Length: 179
Image 1 (tube, rainbow, N blue to C red):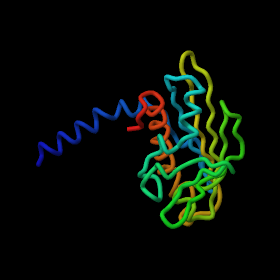
Image 2: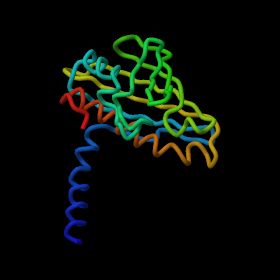
Image 3: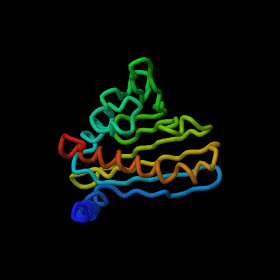
Image 4: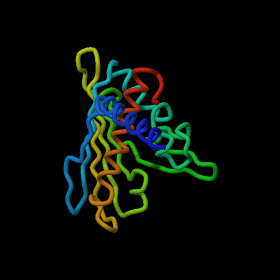
């Protein structure tokens, strides 16, 4: 049993630097009123290719962070809804409030468990050419009421989840597979 635990810990420690190199994430601000998280990564592809993948969340979003547990149910529809189809319903995760088709995507709404609070947020994704690649900055600002404190309860988990999503986007763009 100790050998299995040591092997698992070694694998976790060895995989850590690979994960950290994929994206830089942090809670950049927090107060009683809310929080901000910022994720950054450089993706080895043109901004156009990154944008095309970004706009198809079914290809890169983690199924573990969906209500249906199947990322194939996610899409951006014609009305600007970042929606998820359920067997007997739907989820409107966020709404596009600005998209220029190549460098800026801005959405408004509450992601995941924030939908059960009086909180909402603004997600901004910015793409900038960086040599042969693209620098991606993903910022989520959340504000409102949440029992126990919005920043205290939700900032760190939201940071981890968005960091995971950006790492999956990067991998999907670069390899064709998010995991």
